[in-house]
Image 1 (cartoon, rainbow, N blue to C red):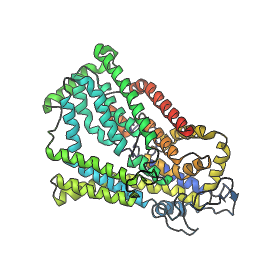
Image 2: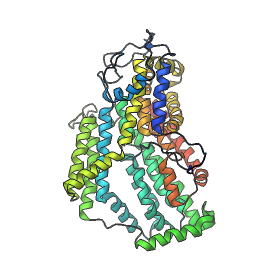
Image 3: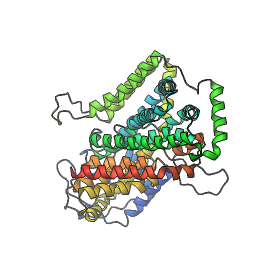
Image 4: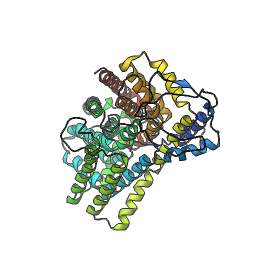
Length: 502
């Protein structure tokens, strides 16, 4: 899942090399900074319309409400989760009209973790990809677009990232046997999943959380995100296939040619050791589980789309986080039972899966605490007013591009996609409303920028871990991939600008 807390990678034990602090530390530090800011930034507010959204041009200053730097900073994440009142007054957020905390989002993340934990425990996903690899033996050229598409589908729907590390050894052995290099193999997995996340359609960890805090259904903007996904994936596949064929014709063209002998020996010995590259036999039960896995996301997608508002004669269920959480909980139980799990193993798998995402749930609470401090200190509207004044003349297309460019450094500073969405959306979504830009464009700008950064930042455990498995030096990967990164950024910017003008 693309919700990494960005453990620093690459530093040697006992060394003095600088590494960025964890996302937890960064976000809590921002809470303290915001608490200090409430003593400096003038307090102000907008008038609200009937739906609870700020009315442009109605900003006015009010009496300051500075926050207690220690006490309120410690209470902010707790209040952010529960959406309760504190000593200063009621916490409220735009686009809701009611008290709103992040507890429903945090619980959704934990249940999704349990759902993925049970599914992965059955081995269905691993066996499905292993079977696909075996079927493509002898036609390895077509393995590149097919596997990249499969990994991109995982990234786009459920934020496949850390899970992909299990497939590197399998893909590498087959790719090397076909005459390619480890860079090709690493790119298939890393860029496949990463481009899928960049063009997330219903990824609950990026699109879902951002849409929730922007106050819109996850289906809003899905057509644009699908276009970005398909175009970016096509470009990525072309980029990798072009390099792979060049290496197959002339191995000296490989960026890891000097490591070829050692890599060939290492990975081919591994392949001989397990007989089939670690591939598992796919059972009929696992096929049913894969169908149920896909059905869980299809149900979520159907249930959140406002069919009646679109003039389509299908029942509108108006689901939101509580209903989606309940649905994934049901599918978790069904998949566990179909997988033949006994009660103890089913619950253990669910708890272990949820435990893997506990850090993500905590990050959401900490990140929401920033909004709590700003709201209680009544400086959120002041920041909105400053941004409204600064961006008031850039136009809709310009605003979309500025948002994207702003999210790039923010994604490096806050590498957790969930944390960034929780921090940014309460400010960016109302700001988009001032310029009549759909909030869905802000969501797309955020997730595309975050997805792009997580294709190469050295604080990503997925990037550094995948390259380490493939024995590809990070510096060489960076020199190889930067033209593709520039193209992907250009694609996103063009799509955002066109969508804003449409």
